[in-house]
Amino acid sequence: MKALVLHEPHAPLAAARWLERWDARLRVLGFGLLAFTAALAHTIPGAALAALVSAALLAAGGIAPSQAFARLRWLLLFLVPIALLVPWRAGGDPTPLFAAWSWGPRRGGSALALRLGLRALGAGTAALGALAVGPFDRTAAALGGLGVPRRLVHMLLLTYRYLFLFRDQLGRVRAALGSRGFVPRAGLHTARVYGEVIGALLLRAVARTERVDQAMACRGFDGRIRVRRARRPDTTDLGKLALLLALAVLLVLFDRGVFA
Image: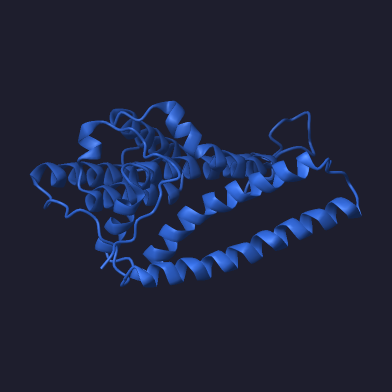
């Protein structure tokens, strides 16, 4: 039987030896719990501290800030609407943020936007440690080892691979349109061209899906992801997991005001 082998669109993050050699299942479990802790923070100091702890762990793991920013830049784009829209709602405190601007952003909404942004940054930074270190097929196999349903793992693997393929196809189509003198403008002609391009890409994606399914069946794929047999977790791996669990507990206690 053949294994499911995927081309890696993005190289894994270059990390320190202690992070790369950590058992993938325990790494995903530890950083995943830290991501949930950051995402569920109730206070701004708690969310900020969770984000700082996640960033410090990545820095201690040898991951360069430029690498982390390159992976998180799309998350930052999603935070822009939050920063622009949420501060204008009351959010519990209708007091204007600036006394001279009575109809401007509200204190409650601004605090809510800041808390949401810090929670997203903390969770996204921790998720990098869980998912972006090491080959993605091993990370997916680790998810399967933690009890994630097999079909969901396969969907995650194939989606990861073919989103980048779809992006590359779209780039080639845009280059072809440019070579034919197409200049996008606000009008029906541009909308018609974009509609035809998107329709053609979706039809190609359906056809490619059928071919991939047939190719996997011809190669004997039986639904299991096979990677090199991982070593059994040792005391060092368990100690790293215990450290992250302790950090998560301390973050929850700090967020709840236990240390106040």
